[in-house]
Length: 539
Image 1 (cartoon, rainbow, N blue to C red):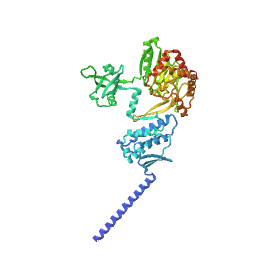
Image 2: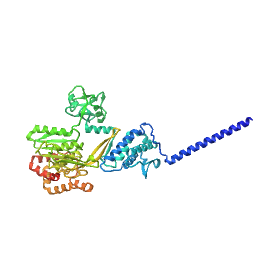
Image 3: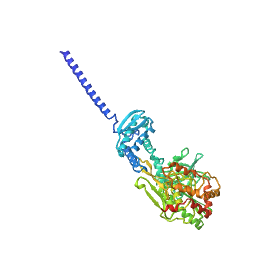
Image 4: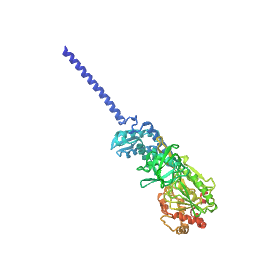
C-alpha cells in the first residue's frame, strides 16, 4: 500500500514536469516567432542615461531640431531621409565596424557584416521619427560596440551631425557645447577683462590692453607678465587654460597678479569682468593717408569703423589725402556688419544681394546713409585670405565705383551661413544663401578681382600700376568675363581666378601701391575706371 502511494506521487510529479516543459517550449516558440517577425529588433525603450547611451527625450529633441533645420534652410533642396541616413552612418567614425544601410523601406544596422537590428524607415519628411530612429540605431549600436558604448553623448552628437553635414559643403558644420560657446563669444563678446597675451619663452606676456576695459581701468599694462589668475599659478598652463581663467560671468570678480619690469615685487589687480567685444578695427596715419586695418567683422566693427573715420577727420580735416581699407587676411564674420561698413562709404545704390531656397534668405541690401568721407580717394586691399564679409565690402565698393581694389583674387567664400541653436547648447552653422555682387556675379568660388594684381610681387609699385593701366583692354575683357561667369562652371571660374592667383599677402607692396595711387589723383581715377561697374549696377 505504501509503495503504491509513492508510485502515484512519482507519476504526478513526472506529469507536472512534462507540462512545465511543454509550456516553456510554447513560450520559447512564441518568443522566437515574434523575434523572427520583427527581425529581432531591439526594444524601443532606451536604458537610463549613463554616459554610454543617448537619453531618449533629449537626444530625440536635439536630432529633431537639427534634421528639421537642415531640411528647411539648406541652400539646396535635400531629402530629410538622406540627411538622417548620412547622420547615422557617421557612427562609423566611432566604430568603423558599424554600418547603416537602407534596403527598400528597411534601415539595417550591421556590426562587421553581422546584422544587429532592422527598423522600418519613417516617411521621408518626418523629422521627429527620423530623429527617434537615430536614437534607436545609436542605442542598438552601443549594445553591439564597446567603442560606441564608451562614447560620451557629445561624441555621439558630433559623429551624427558631422556625418550628415560632411556631404553638404565645407562651410556647414557642427559645433559642440564648448566650441559653440566660443563661437558666440567671437560674434557677440564675452565676460572678460580686456587683454590679449602671448606665450613666449614660458611666460604669458600682455601684448594689448583694450581701452575702456576693466584691465585698462585697473592699471594692467602692455608688457606685464601674468603670474597668477586668482590663486592659480599660470606657469605650465596652456594659453587656452589661462584665457579660461580670465573669462567668466559678467560682473564676477577676478584677481590678476603680474610681474612688471622695473618693479621690485609682484603687482596684484582686482577687477570686475565686463562684456568684452574684440577690437577689429585699428587706425594709423602716414603722410595724410589714413590706414584702417579690419581683422574681422563682429557686432562692433561698423560702429568702431565710424568712430575711427570721425577721429581721422577731426585729426586731419581737409588734409586727408585718402583712405586705405586693409582687408588682407580678413576671414569675414557678420553679414550685417559688412553691409554697414560698406554703407559708411556709399551714399546710394546696392551693396549686396543674397539668394537661397528659404524665403527669408532672399534679401536686397541698399546704401542708406551718407558717405562719411565724400570725395576722398579710397583703396581696398585684399588677398587670398579675404573672405565672406570682407569680400562683400570689396565687391560693393568696387562695383559702385567707390574704391580701387588692390591685391590678389580673394578667397571666394560667397555664401551666407545661418546658425541653428540646438537644445544641447551646440549649434549648426548652415549654408543658406549665395552672395550676389551689385554687378550681378556670384562671389562663391570666384571672389573679387583686383584692379591692380600683386600676385607674386615683391616690389616695383610703379611697374604694377603701369602694367595695369597699359593692359586696360585686357583687364576690361577679363572683368566682363568675371561678371558673366557661370556659377556651375567650376573650370571657368578657376581659370578666371588663375589670371590673378589668390595668395596670402603680408608684404608692404599693396600699401606702397595704394599710397602711390592716392598721392596721384590722375593715376587713381584711371585705376578706378578699370573695374568699376556703376552703370551695370544701376540696372
